[in-house]
Image (cartoon, rainbow, N blue to C red; front, side, top):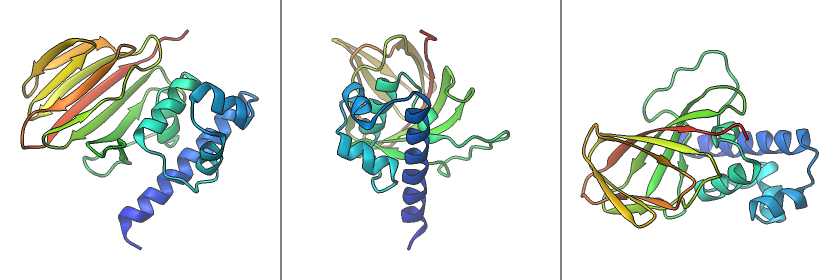
Length: 191
């Protein structure tokens, strides 16, 4: 087996273990979790057992339903973490246009998370609206980005940044023939 396959299996197992732990801490059944996340009970069961490697959109649905940062499901609990580019656990969007690489979270189930994202050339990633109170801070580290927030478009060049309410419908568009690298900081309200 190659290392990519091993990393995907490790990530799937870790997400499953964290999801089961969080669900049990909250005293929820799989059916209750399915209801609040809009992810089927069958799929959630497979994720918890490490039998499924969920896409980024499924992880977002679960995190939004639980009102958690996605890093609560993706990051292992460690006291010191070094995050190296292209070495982190990557989660792909359903259309594989975007690879999200969580970097750090502030605390266990923290109110802050940091990610790298790699957007393929001439592609679009539409995560939709996140849970209420999410604020996104996005910096273009390499390339260009068009971001659509509801009906408005914003164009960012390398090292430009944008801040917006992530609980609004939004999409990230790479209009170029080169990869765009993004740096995300996301904050979550305590309510």
